Structures are given as structure tokens and as C-alpha cells.
Length: 143
Image (cartoon, rainbow, N blue to C red):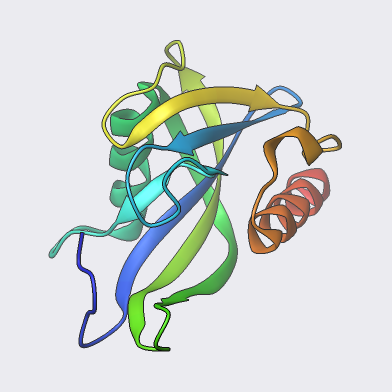
């Protein structure tokens, strides 16, 4: 879990599109356990960020993707009640397209859903996640 790290950890978030829908997962473990989010997780030592994106999506949702361009980089910092940094992730968010498989919850995900990017309210997402999805929609439309 890496509670109270001595440095930021690098993670990847993946905005996966299948036609006009975006993949969301309900997190099964901390941080943000029980909340809807983008699939993703920590990058492993020696692993390129694109490989981390493919692995995390495969582990959490059971699907194959084609990884596209960078969407943005986000700092996710969670402090405890005393103000100490409990979690600090630098998240590299990438755009991706679905290539195969049926999405099903696995590994760290409790649930998966294909959502309409224009109607994310039912998922009560972190504002940064909503911003990243909106940026990904723009980048995808410009491509």
C-alpha cells in the first residue's frame, strides 16, 4: 500500500475509450477505496509507462488496449488527520483505445463500467479525474 512514503510514487492512469464510452473502475483498495476512478496503478521498476498502462488495465479490467498520447500529469496527495502525507502519487495519465476483451473487475477493482463522458455525475468522481477525462475527450477529438 505504501502508507507514509518518503518520496512520491509514480503511477499511471488510463483513459480508455470504447467507441463513445470511457472505462471507469470502482477502487477495491486504498487510497480512495470504494470510489470510482480511472484504471491504473503503480509503475514497476524497469517498466516503461506504456507497458504499465497496458498491464494495469489488463489486471483491473481484463481488456487489451492500444496506448495513445499523454493527457496530463496529476499529483494525488492524501494527508491524514494530523496533516502528514499518507499517500503521494505522481500520476501520468494516458489516452488509450479498447482493442479486445470484455471488461470485468479484477485485481484492485471492485467493479467496472463504461460511462458516457458527458454524464459522469452518477460516479461522483474526483474533480481531477473529471478534468483528465474532459482533456482526453478533447485530445481524442483533435486526433
